[in-house]
Length: 315
Length: 252
Image (cartoon, rainbow over all chains, first blue to last red; front, side):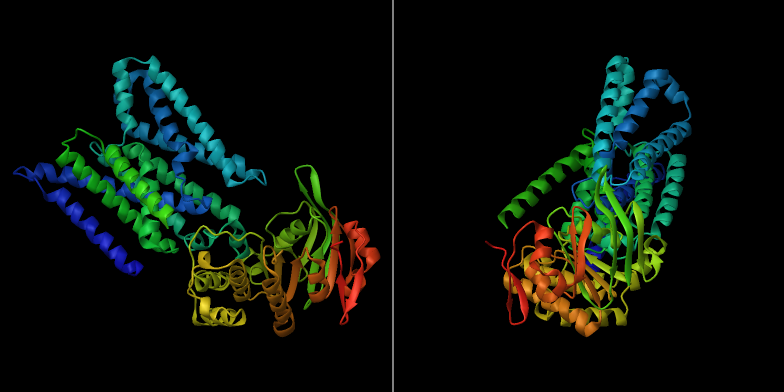
């Protein structure tokens, strides 16, 4: 099967799932239900694509297929920011505080953190990407511990508000925030386009990429900035869902069996949409909100990885 | 011509290449030899801009390496490092087509494919072209990577220990190919070698490094000499001439 055929199959599955999600159980008040479901679907597509895209790009840059961008600690930083706001000002303030302000502060802080990390590390020669990751892991753990420390101290009622932010949710996506996110992501994607041709070559590794004329350090740095923006926006919009990236990127590699990033990225995006829409469908209609989408996806993902491991070890 | 002037490269505080100056002639095979840690690979990496040097200048066709645009340089000079582990699964043909990236930026034209075909032909990879790299033996894989470098169609070809882990047959095969690259296609080959007999048999010019400095350089015939080798390797290496070729007997 050629990549194009496979992509078309994925696209059709995604369309069917979206259709199912939008149109089943409509009952009579569809003019109330449909716009809400549409908003949810749009948020799912946007974040799903952003996560899939940034994970594939990140894995190509780092030349490692088991990493996700969350490893540099962006998820943890997001939780820390949210916890800190509640810790310092209380949840009442948070609901009072304009959602836009929260959104913008969080995105800016996360992108600045990522930029500082890259800038600080890339300025010194000989520091490779693994050092960056190591520092990222340490910062991530640090942010987590700090957030946990504050969570222990705050009022249990306030903690519930924090806990609510700890899990990804597509149930209350703000339309205005969605529009801002969409614009930011489209801009990032447009900026990225001119580097797109380098991805295939960079998958060969640093030496080959330089040999073939890629301005390696500069391209890596700019791609990482795009990845950081996408991840930050997606996380702030719906909560930490980068766990999804690892799964969809690897399913895309396995399913498409190609090295071409144009196909890989498209495939990963479609798989991501399928996983999220399908997962959300199960959460809402089968489990009637008794579980979260993270649980479903982690469960299916875990089973899939065990299957992969078993198959590889037999071969 | 490649001119290296007073090149110094430090890793941390430790200088690995110290004040090296050398001219590499066109249309010849130049071998870098010397003991482990002499700085041969570092020198090669600096010339091919894989690592940045600290002090000194490298001129490629009378233009300093930092003034070259990356993409233009990749049409002039190609490097193949020792370890060629890939994270992606490619067929031989796909790998070779990557050699055309500097010209086509990934969208290969008719002419690009022509070059790919020629490289396949030259390296005798016709039967293997649709095999995946991870299904090949070390020697076949090395040939595929060299084919990619040939498809890149550069004047200068730099190879860092291309004979590593190859048996005698494949090592000889690779060296003969390099000789053909120079004699038939007029390329300039710079190569890091450990086995001085391969250097003696196949290279035109030898540069010997020790402790980051060049201690000898000259035509192969002059360098392969018991006194010189003693100085380079701290070993007494008797030399025998067999069929007008100098063989170094370093086993005892």
